[in-house]
Image (cartoon, rainbow over all chains, first blue to last red; front, side, top):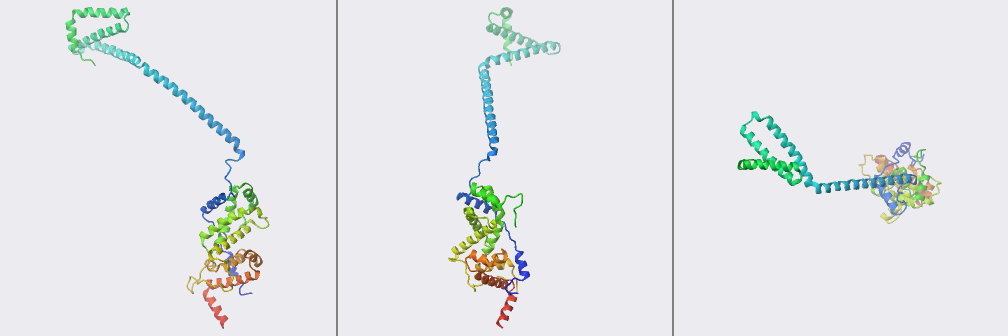
Length: 182
Length: 190
């Protein structure tokens, strides 16, 4: 055998050398970019034509959803705006009416409670409460007449209160000056 | 390693997609299939310098894509690709040294990095060979080319390839086993 021929051990050693080695991933991207720059690789198509109908349907659905959302939003927004404006313009009357209802109920309930508890409380306090109630009644009658001048019942109540009030005007006025209004 | 299994698209189909449509996915598939072998081949040719090997791989794929239409599919795609890689390596040697591979019968051998009584591994010994020796040794003993084929690829006579291989093997043995090499030289002198 030629002494420059490979020995079996040498041949085996050479054949056992690895034949493959994976370079860094960066090299693949670098190479792809270089090929793109040379125009050898073209940009990927946006989507294969087989998916085009699905794409169109998807876009149409998205647009429809968007438009309906906008319309509903505008409708709700305009309705809320109208309501808000109405509230602003009607507020004084609404608020006053609501307060009359709530405080009227409270006033009546308080008087009922006072009637129930008359025998057990301080007589002086009960007397003062009665005077406050009468003063409130008189003032309320006067306001009702202002509100509805043609209302005969309100007018008669006010006239009756004024007549009895004139008899004890000095006392009522004196007493009512001691009234603490809440 | 042959990887064209039933689930894989054949090289020719991928190359066609790249050539006709510039199909990026087809290129990536070809790249991933053949680059590990190409990279290892040029890395050994260049003596293990990875940064040079990466540049050569990129340039090889660029040239392959440019000349894909001229490939006749009479040999395997990987063989054709490695041939391009070899040419790119030769271009690199020319740029670095101002000349092609040296085919002298007695080029200056590198000094082994290991002490005279130590062995170095085969991979290291191949990397330390002069570039011309290394190219012929790898093409013949590792890639299995004949001297005629090597002559065609390197632009030299088949006889030159044969003599270069002989020198390459001798140089390799002297690095792998310095003591026996020394003894052989002494025997020859006596």
